[in-house]
Image (cartoon, rainbow over all chains, first blue to last red; front, side):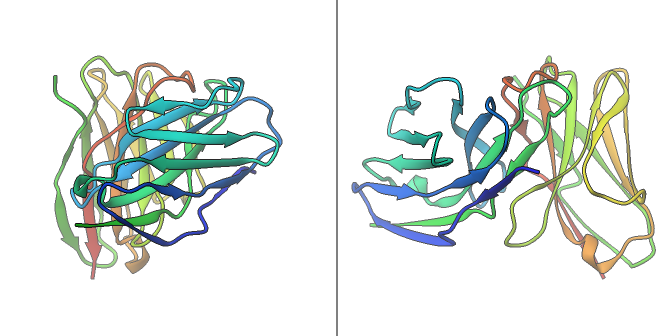
Length: 116
Length: 114
């Protein structure tokens, strides 16, 4: 079974600086999807960025980028120019390919604080 | 464009009671999944509904059941509530079951069992 591990329960960053959140996963599949979701106090899970395992190029979305290391099964999220609104829980998630395995497998999350 | 909506937002139930949570998927979405998020944990998959049938199920007992209606909305039912069922219940929707499709979440229903 696939597992997702986030080893940093809490992280802190100064406003305007850069922070990297770590995620590792375990799978025997060669093709899959990886995601970072943000959960602010409003509790709604918001998709930050996604990565298809078959794509070697790291995904980027404005200030958010990932470092996808397939061989190491590592998927870290880098937030540049951190803003106060980035403060939230961040969850790394894995999804198998194929329609029969539609569920997301989440890590336990990292709580990010942004200091003004 | 309405996103995923859930009701109620908060509720308190007594051990042994039954509860029904409701979800309306994002407009145009036909696939609904439910997740349980205990305090301090990541969400855990309960089950997925597509074409009004349960298509996939996580490691949850039969006390957890669901339904999907012809308009794609969904209900989650939990019978014989236990204290450990206290959690945030998240509904998620997508268009189709393709794993590449983006999944959108609602704000959740917070259930407290006393």
